[in-house]
Length: 396
Image 1 (cartoon, rainbow, N blue to C red):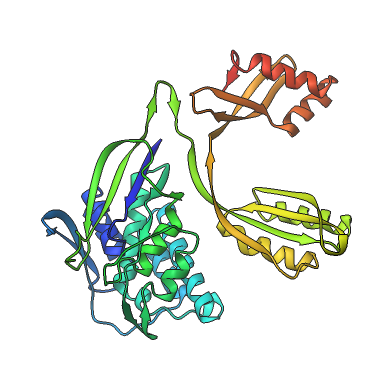
Image 2: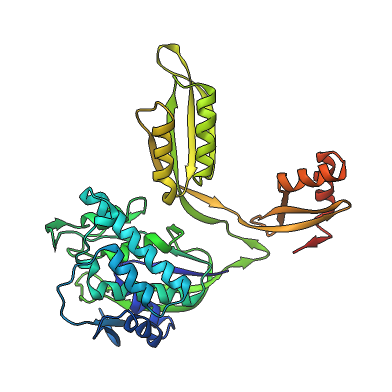
């Protein structure tokens, strides 16, 4: 399992990301070709080696023409669509910009399509994001992780005036991401850097157990007095020691609401819609509410990208007046799928790799049920057959 890890000791920006990726082995020519293909005359990349507090790092400069263009999301997606990018790199670049647009829309209280990009819509920021998407896509990583993220302190001047660090859009993009303390009086994490992390990182925290293969060092444009202004990007494989593997980690959202004046039929209908909205888990718990009324706790686990849809369903389909929500870390086993032969046919099964390296195989209910009905045998007989045969007669 090939993974990457962003060590954001001095924050992260678009140009720092490009520097770290190219220093880790991504050819600058690959990124430069993609940037030049966007159709902005005079836009290209240059790389040089610099030092920050005595440490060497790669700095990538975006050379661009002087322009006054302020773009909307559709302008940027059109530029990306016309560029010479792989479909997966194009999709990643657009997703990063959509995350920025959603953050800006929330901050300014407007529709995403009406967001008027300023700094992030400039040619250099577009080059940073497209270059980062192309570079990450070229590495073929199975997962990306990152450290806690420092934002710095002080103020920053943007198109809307002087704002405290982190700038409003940056803070919105970092929602749910652990922030590291920092007294450095500068903006360490930019909206571009925050958007890259939000889009590609599975979980944040200490470095996972990994065998390091390459390390890239990307320099920020400013020399800091307090520490090296460097983003470190490590590439390697998940460590397996004596057949043991470490569970993966990610961040999910816990959503809850209490209901005491909704019928079971309404709750059941709501649960069905919550499942179709991409929820990871939905469950109810009987509770006792004020004035001794019996009620129902409705709880949902979901990824952040499904959070808005989940909350909209709760407000539309129930009488709730409020929803509780918070991000939660979870440890997860590496999962997959296999097919197990039985005397009556094949059964699709889920697999989960335990920390000791052994694999747990669980039949998919619908697959086992269909085989039981077709074969005229009890469902439990099919389950027992899977348990008997899966260790000796699997079909990958």
